[in-house]
Image (cartoon, rainbow, N blue to C red; front, side, top):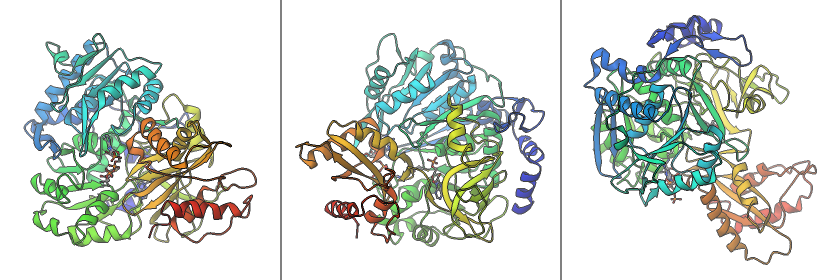
Length: 630
Ligand code: COA
Ligand code: AMP
């Protein structure tokens, strides 16, 4: 069936469409139907089926005779190593780890936090939880101890699984002290921590609390897969919202399995035995869906890459991995390609490698700028596919489904909506806009399987954040338009979320940290355009009346504070001290206008501005720190 008929079928007959897709999953007991809409607007999928995610990602492939196939490749230019783990080995390792967790009391429904770098053991930890029906929550390694503490208190884990260290090109990331600090700060205490000791750094274990990854598995009975209901949470993944409190996106097991399996063939054109590589991190949704679960559910080989696009050792790193492992479909963030393009503008290094197995390059995580797409099309010579999704959706809301039909590419658009996503553009009053008109992008409920059913411990926040502004719709937080051919264009966020190097960050969370500095009376953080990272955060600080501190000292302390509280990933490196912030008469800070001044764009004087003269002060302060950039 071609894309248009499939899409129509998915909206007209969601039960028929998704029950057909569900046939590709091994159920312990199959669901009676796909969509459970009795508790509208809280929709569920496959709620009465019984299933296990680890079985579908690992064991069933061994049963089907794929035991000797490589399941996970660990490609680590940072440690100069490359190794493979077969499906049979993965099954044994995961069953053993799950058995050890079970022996220490982890059961179905318990939460387990995973704080690990890009090593296969991170996937094994996720799969071991899935095997037991325990709910994992992976925390990205670039977050500081405080962010980990916030997540510990929110999901109250029985156990935390961590590595002794992570490795960034310029430094060793000492995970263990961060973990200890986070547990000390949090009110909730886990029963125990499992530490995977890496040879680059052996951490000191705390007696009575910490156990070593290998030793705690000695002599335990391997665990079998525990069946869970289709609506049982597979994991919680925290993402940035408007405030400092992250949102715990819940993923229900049944829909997650069915939808990801469907996407592997339909969107990425991947079959069992193919090699799929998503160059992201297990701490992000791309890592959950397309480093861990998606490729493994499909019986493909996945690549866990511990390195950067450039500098480990050079801008040819990606192409080398693709050649050496015969990658068929590759997925990364546009920022990674921009980093490569900056070092290798002519694509000379690409020519050094044989990329004949590569069939497509997918981009997501931020807006794909036309220059980067054209550069990749020209130099890599395969279709370059932009697709649009969020932590909340778990898979692409809009894409070009190569496994069904390669649609014409329109540069600047992530193409057409995927099955189950009834995407609309609405004005402030919730009225649908005409083709080409810019508005808020919303999706008519219900969302398809695999998307978030709620936020962990925060049903009210779920309703308020996503379902209230436009009743009957899910509000994506993105703004854009749909053209006359139905192609979607994502132009900006409608909230205070910014996107730095493909990482989703909250300016509100940074403002909360800055406001805690004793000399700061008021502050604002904006996302300014950055040629490499898409956006980068910039702070404005108003100091307390009578403060005699030197501005550069306060700025330095604030930069340090954000790094300590949120983490290096926030990339908060610049701020300027100003006397006042531009506001509307009702007191709303005019962040959008400040972004335009920093980016050197034309802007209209906001009609509601309290005192237009402040904008000149902002312009002067920005010029002093080098904005607008040339
Ligand atoms: N653990 C600890 N620290 C981390 C980390 C991790 N897992 N990941 C990043 N950091 C740190 C970096 O070391 C850096 O610290 P520094 O300020 O001391 O230099 C900071 O966080 C910012 O890192 P990063 O965003 O990686 O920027 P960079 O300047 O080091 O590299 C790019 C720039 C473009 C090469 C890099 O951002 C990149 O590869 N981006 C692709 C992102 C991506 O795949 N996103 C997934 C979305 S699909
Ligand atoms: P995250 O939840 O971290 O995956 O971030 C999701 C946000 O990233 C979306 O809401 C968009 O703002 C942005 N985003 C993701 N993919 C795209 C894309 N292809 N084009 C434009 N923006 C994107």
